[in-house]
Amino acid sequence: MLEGEEYGTAADWWAFGAVLYELLTGLPPWYSQNAEEMRKQVLYTPLPFPNYISSEAKDLLQKLLDKNPNERLGSVLGGSDIQEHAFFRKVDWELVTFREIQPPIQPCETPDTMIEGSNFRDEFTNISLGSIDSSGGGTAFSESFKGFNFEAPEDRQIEYGYTRDASLPNSYGDTP
Image 1 (cartoon, rainbow, N blue to C red):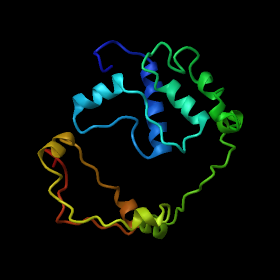
Image 2 (image 1 turned 90 degrees about the horizontal axis):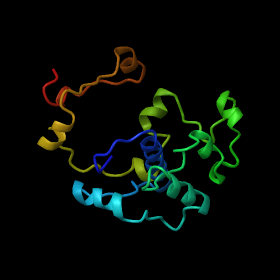
Image 3 (image 1 turned 180 degrees about the vertical axis):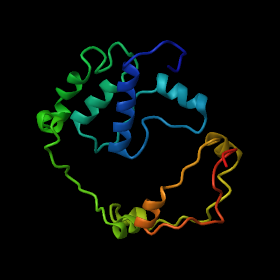
Image 4 (image 1 turned 120 degrees about the vertical axis):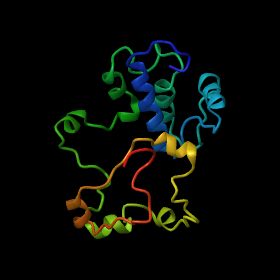
């Protein structure tokens, strides 16, 4: 994709690998604020791993983020390749298929706990936000969201005790 070539489902497995990497490490696999630098990292830099990543997770991520799409895990046999990987050895895929497996973490779902952030560790909910620019983050930020607008349906606003701050912009760009 980065080199302008055609791509197929291997790009989806790459995306899955990138999301999984970020879920496991808290960071994207490669990152730079400069788009060209990040492109070079993706194309030429080996995948970095924190020391706490298990060997099974490291192997899975390396295979999902293989720079050669023809050798990437999932490119030949699809999802079965991934399901059979050692990282998922304890997963009962039949239970997953029939939605009979309980997730290890069940989020709190009451309006009070959702608003309080009870599903997040204190180290994240107690971070000072500092001064927040309500103008939308500048021109580049606004351009990224031009035409985007969302407001929760009224029944959800009432259910969760949400009231919109009238001082904030209603949308980004040219959406009313």
